[in-house]
Image (cartoon, rainbow, N blue to C red; front, top):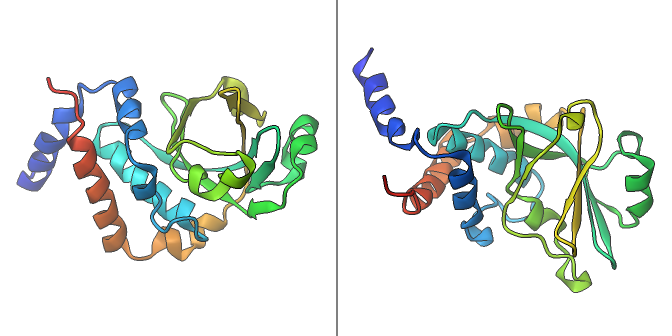
Length: 202
């Protein structure tokens, strides 16, 4: 094994004993103002997902990009992110009254664990003036029906979030996905350094 690969393995193997539950709990401790790469601007979900895929892999969890449609709803308001009515169930379409927040949305997918991590939904879809507030990091386990195209909803009693797979592939060709690797790596390293301070001691 080349020395560089050996050093990389030795560095990352420290975290192989971390459970998924511990890792997701750590992600939930990140202040939401430091998560999104560029606030709530166009493409921020792509850049941030790109960085968090690297972060997940650093801590030993295989991760992939996943395009989704998302509906965020409370009693007063609703926001569609990457919303395509043809892809949603009639029930989800009915509750969406507000204009689209974005044409596409990208999240982190942990295929072996069926976990969806959405680092930027709070920046894209929160509407505090309407009482619609999303926590810093959405982390949910989805049922097998999600793979078949079903919309899956999660909520805390005040806000309901509905996700569904999307065939949007515009992210693949965007500058947010392909450009400025050094800056994206620097951002992910900053998050990794912060998370390492929270790493459960062995």
